[in-house]
Each structure stands twice: as C-alpha cells, then as structure tokens.
Length: 236
Image 1 (cartoon, helix red, strand yellow):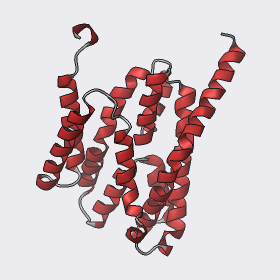
Image 2 (cartoon, rainbow, N blue to C red):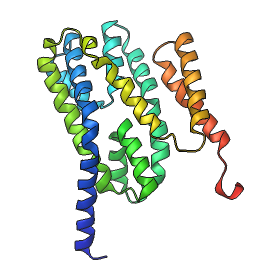
Image 3 (cartoon, rainbow, N blue to C red):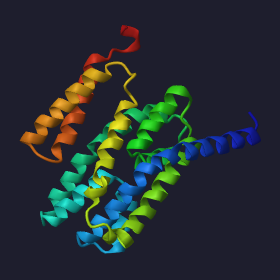
C-alpha cells in the first residue's frame, strides 16, 4: 500500500471514529455539566473543577472525590476510593491491550489515559469487526474528551441555575448509560452468568463494605468467573 493510500485510510478511520462518538455525547453532555455544577457547589473554584475533568477524566471517580471532599476525610482515603472506583479501568486495559498491535509505545500510553467506559466498549466492538487502528481510536477519543472538559466548564459556570438535578432525572443518566454499555456485550459467551455473579457480589459488597468498594468487588468477581469458564482455543 502506498503512503498516500495509508494516509487516506488513516483519515478515513479518524473520521469514522469521530462520527461513531457523536451519539455518546448525548450522555456525556448532561453528566459532565452536572459534575461542573456539583464541583462548584462543593467548594471548588471553576479552574480547579475544569482541571479535575481534564486530568482525572473519569466521571464516577470525580463524583466520588467530590463526595469525600465534602465529608472532610483524609487525602489518602480519597485517593484509595478513587482507585477503587477506577479499578475497572485496569481490567479494561488488560482486555484492550491485545488489540493494540498497531499502536506505538507512546500511542499505547496515551490510549490508556483515554480509556473510559465508552472508549473501551467501542474499541472492543471495533476490534471484533476490524483492526483497531490508532486513527480510529483517537478519532473516537477526541470529541469525548474535549466535550467532557467543555461541558464541565459550562456546568461550573451556569450549574447554579439548576437547584435540584434529580427533578429533571439528570442523576439517572449515568446508571442508564452504564446499563446500555453492559448490554452491548450480551452476545458474548458466558455473558449472563458473569453478569449475574458480578451483580450479586457487587450488591453484597455494597451492603457490607459500602461505597465504592462494591464496584471493584463486582468487577473482580466477574473477571475471575470469566477466566475460570474460558478455555484456550487449543483446549476447545
């Protein structure tokens, strides 16, 4: 393949990734704006709220951070809680890494920073149908990341106009969004047993260990069951 064809393919992949990301913005916009609003109400100034979105880039963890900041707990507790919520990203990276053979070491490092939930789900889906290229991956990441930062800033500026987000159902967007991501994998082998075990362990952990440990517990339980039920191709 000539250099011009490679360049054209890269542009096409980037544009396809960008286009595929646009429907996800429907969920990201209100969620990011809500974070900005809650961050300012929790005592953060606008630059700090925007910096949190740009550097952490993990919505659920950012809300956990705000909740714990309001409780004035030690910094190490906040870091540990954020790690617990973000532990699923470790599982994401372990799964997605097998599809990054076309990525340079620098691209791999950058790809893990952008590895949020929709990025993982779309990357896995793309890898099942075609090769996952850096152009497609970062084309998908670009609108998600830039929109997340922008709407966090807008929420911080104007979020005070919404006194109670729950009245408008904004607080329900995140769980509904996660449910859609999970159900996107329902055609995979062992999906329902893994989902059942993961959900059961997560609920038990929630009522015994409390938030946010149930997230990591459910993820680990599902991962272990998946590993136990899977067999290498030569053994099947």
